[in-house]
Length: 313
Image 1 (spheres, rainbow, N blue to C red):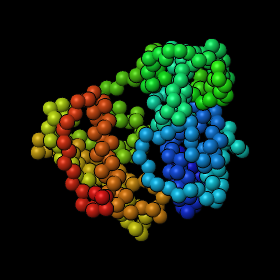
Image 2 (tube, rainbow, N blue to C red; image 1 turned 180 degrees about the horizontal axis):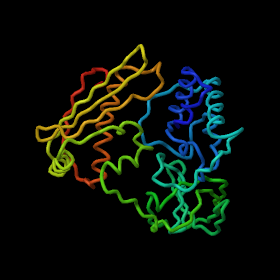
Image 3 (cartoon, one colour; image 1 turned 90 degrees about the vertical axis):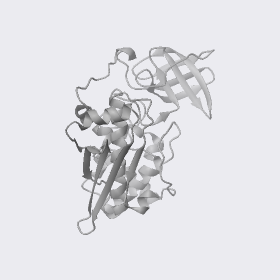
């Protein structure tokens, strides 16, 4: 939701209040607050209410209840960045291109023509009987079928109405069979990371392997060898700027190093935040490296050096 941060009519204190709402809702992107079809912001999200049709799998800091002032600023920011007045988006979001950040209560399984609906821990399936561009209608099916909950075989759906023997939902337009959606092929890890910028932000925008470092790191991880890592962060309180850096070592040599700026509201920057960005860069890098090289059975230990007691706690 960087579009809001770039709005010219908001000062730092207002951005702080807007960010409080975002953390309260536990959302990071526009798709987290939009309906499954990507055509409008949900009423709950627009009114700064806890989302009931989806949950975030991430751990979030605790937040106090949102004040009327914060709610008003949140709505003002949404309307300035994404809508004119109300909840309808200027630009519809189109088809899903990757797994949602949220865990949705309702999913559409196009291949099996099934809708899966979950409420208060109870799960029920519905067989699609009518599908239009505006809505999908389905009737209960018994017994339940084995279906995948992973994209692209399952996509989020928003419930429009629900009765005892029927459910009507809305989801992004389905134009092709899920099995026909091919994963993009990447020729290098660097190329892969550049395509993940929406997820990694600026944590991995700057990194560099030493000669032979990429191959050595892969061998260390596949052979479950111990790795060492170090991170650091710095803050300039006068300029209100912060940055971070990190190193990853294996077989006694530096394999890769990274650095970058610390994002956030300037008034909230701190040395601890900078240190945590450095540590976060290491974790994010290893996650994507293992994903790219299909390293699943990983038991390697990473010994990390951090010189900030608050960050360690």
